[in-house]
Image 1 (cartoon, rainbow, N blue to C red):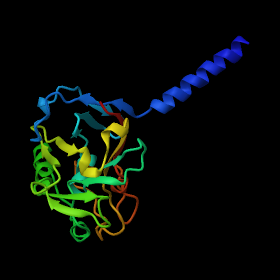
Image 2: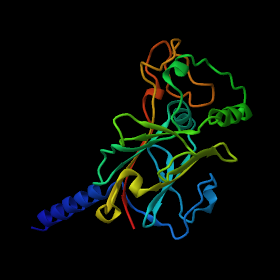
Image 3: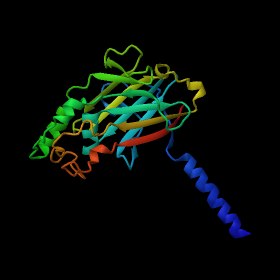
Image 4: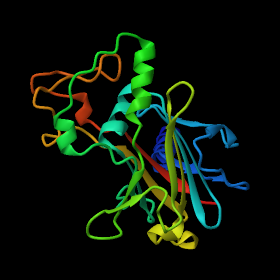
Length: 246
């Protein structure tokens, strides 16, 4: 009898643990952060996703979701700069995520197919290259609001979205956003848990350089097999969080 009880307790605990995996409490935005790339003004401690290596925070007030992301991994940074970064939302708290935004949008397929290897002889050259990769990030794509994505200037968005990605003093990529719930038709009062997906773009057959050249040396080169073989750039960095809104 005792053994059966123990098994039942373990099983119940496992179900609870599984159900809560990836679910976090939103931090309360008593003083809304300014979307300026200065991550230090946030009062919340960073959360770290061990698998994707993404550091993140999500806060909200009555009208807006606030997003803070930090990308320290070279390979993830390269995927963001080349292929873009998606943030998608699901008001039912699941991983379906059909509305959201892509920012930065990355390079188009024609540019990517012309990519050439870049020689980076030392750490200073790597850092400079990482900064250069974020040199033109002024366009945002809104997803799920129309049949085709809506392209707009980052500073010309009329729906209240504010978003910025910039390198910090250590060339880590800092991403900040203010996203009004109404921008994507999310009724906060009916959304106790908001599903949030963070995902980079990736290399595909349509954008792979003809030479299958490896990434710049020292900048996300791990796991690449040239000559048309498997590329780690074809695997997106991915994070999902079920956010309990305040």
